[in-house]
Image (cartoon, rainbow, N blue to C red; front, side):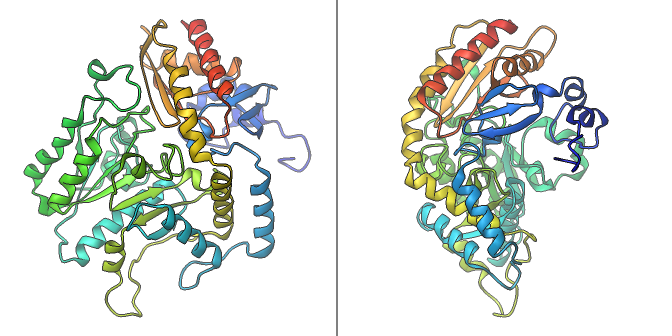
Length: 449
């Protein structure tokens, strides 16, 4: 039991507030915590404190594509703890991290053969930004210090990721701590041109030319990197227009700017390929990853870089530390062991192929809601989708909150940001579960009105 006596009361604990939770409307949770308190999970479902079985519509937080309670992962955790529970990664190494890094490099786009481990997407992004700055400095271009993000982008909550991110609510309270020299591309979402698009919109690729405007404003010689999510996830599944990412690659190459793909959400199968870079046929200079690599069981993130970047760092005296950066838990043995099992299952059970097979099922199920009252847009790609609601007269987010609460009552754990409902179900979901998920959502929306 949590306190060793069997008398722990989670409802009372929520009310006391000892656990200050991330990205949570705390007082709303305190007012009705039982339906929101998760006590167990198996497969694609959670069990709540009030006894409700709810479908996991977002794979935890985009991070449990294999579902919950996988027996092979449990076995790997136990075996690794008994063998090598922790190993420092400064100046020594261990087989688990070495072999997982090689395996991820083998999955990555051609020429991206080097992996640096972190512990989260936020850490991976800050690592990538440091790599970009260090690379240019080593190349004799230390004047390249600017970072270009994108409006509505999410790159974690470190000061670096927050600075290049473009979600207002994540930025406004901490503006005093922003990195200098950061600018943002315009986002690509304009509902009047692309609402209810299936897959990639045909409108919007011209928005990438905004980078040329920033180059003209700042001069390319001052810009280190551009960072984008291939598919913008946390802001509500914003799908890249046809040709957008390809042209972004061309402009970055032309001006000597590094291109970073933040694949914390899209990496490891969500787009039906190991990385979204492969789905869209665009190779960046740096890829960040996290979440699905360990199925959310043990924190792990990382950065994949090109041979050119890695070789540039491998200069100077051989005894010198080439990259003064890292974390106590980088390449943790437990995370590495779980990562191997996750990749084993994905490969052995053909889950990339399964995602591609489920993509049209999710697409059809989601778009079947078109025409329902108070739905403003539906969009999808890979095993992701978003249903955007019209704001209620009482204000933005009011309808979304009501849908979240009603979803719990009807057996769905929904991810609602404002009035946008995002979907990223487990890869192990059945076709019927995806259809039922959207049928239940229909009932939820009709109930809320």
